[in-house]
Image: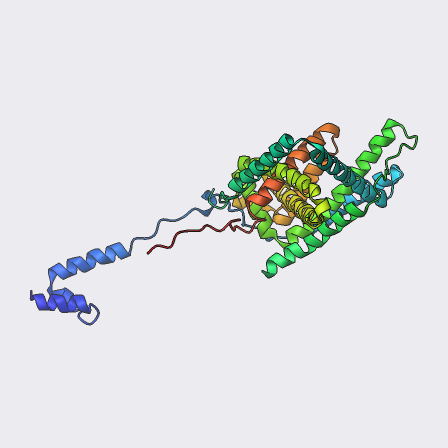
Length: 147
Length: 217
């Protein structure tokens, strides 16, 4: 078979399809290519794959949320009533606990002011070390998605 | 940018209000003055306060999840993927907050301490709220999350970020009612939450610091 015919077939297989009937070599190559093209991709069993965190995450279960919230509110109000308190008492109580934190903070700052120079330097060193450690830990990239 | 504003603007307002209220509160106010109740009554009061705070947490968790469910989910995944790092980061961050607060309190006479202390308080409260909601999501997913697609498809209500957060609030809220254990568990939860919030930059998947590289010629 003429090499030019084979070249023409390779350049435009559809226009020179008749060449396959006369050339055994090109015919064999075409058959092999067709067999490869017919190979199906292996089927994927979706259920075998792990569930991604985002799957189904956009669903909003309002009955569950509203029902649970209503139950929690009713229980809280009943307990407050039984204890003879109002929700305002809870708010005031929370503020008082924050006030305790503020008192501790003031006390610590006053102690620092009254401390010797050595202690103040030690505190400054501790401050630098802890914040340096914090920055070092913050530099690590999160790995949640790739885990 | 708009998403970030939508998330942080309301939270900042809440946190700023809390810090303002804390600072403006009467110094020696004591609402827990003994009123002649027996110990049982005191315990009932504590339980009632815990339940009322649980309502506040529930509202905050639902609102935050509706505003930024994807960020909460990402932080929750990060907490489950690298729990030790989040815990270590939370511990260091708490220590850093405390030391920084003392330093800023020390600077109050120099007039720069007050605004910085205020900003630190707002940031700490934001971090705590966001982190706690991420922990709620993680706990809810660990305990009630779907394991397979068939299970997920078969569920009508118990799926989605919102449901997981609510389940987490309920579980941790129930643990909170146990006298000593509850306090310990919630303290650990706070450490985890603060660590998770900072490790993921509030679920935004961005680095905290820019990496400077030398220009290649």
